[in-house]
Length: 250
Image (cartoon, rainbow, N blue to C red; front, side, top):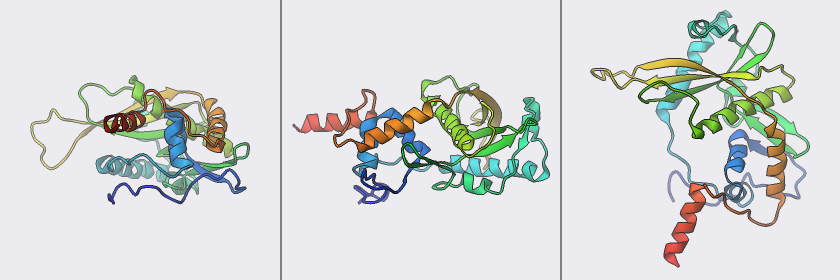
């Protein structure tokens, strides 16, 4: 068995007869939006998509950014990058912040209409003078030119930010509609590596809406409660691969 793929599992599988809340993460809700068939195979039948390899460099960037912003969180000061972009806010202090950031815990809320215990791990939270929380997500890349949020595949990034905003609102917080992406772009135009990787840092604002989240959760519950596997999404690479593999073997 592959060290990365464990095959069919017996845990974390939805049971329509159970009265216990079913844990559903932000990423699984996004899977539902991308392809209901893959979502059903995963959460109802225990057959998940093969995992991607870990982005260890990205994880290192996330960790260092958190340390950097935590210095200003403790001092209750504005980060120079925030000041540069005219963002009137400081990193938010809260006793549960470490839990909110932790994978498999995160910000949690029991959504009673679906009986889902909904979770999502944030990168950072800031607060403005009006007492509104600002959701912040760290992103790392290496590309020529300026980073932006214009690509279609980045719609998932935007939903991610909106989902965290929804979670914090359900926990009773006042949350700004505008969040930020702290985007770091690895430089490749330097003369030498010199055992270090340098980045350009940029803050990109995004104003969205979390109105889609309720319908998505209700739709996910209806999907998992059905006794038939949904149709594949036309653009799902995983489903297209499975179909192509069957076709060449038939």
